[in-house]
Length: 95
Picture (cartoon, helix red, strand yellow):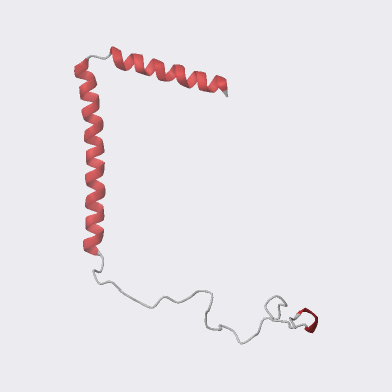
């Protein structure tokens, strides 16, 4: 793990020295290209969201929220699981 970390650190240092050796005009050009790419992506996402919003139905459907635990019985077969039944035992009741 330390070898990998050392290799990554040396690679970043090599990239940093190559960046610093570039003329300022070329550094500026690279930064402007990156910024313009980011700006184009941002505008594309905003336009996509705006288009989807305009395309969708603007009416908001407000409906009653149903509890997923308490549903209508879908089948007439009752469950025979002993955990679901309430079993009263006279020995375990309070007096």
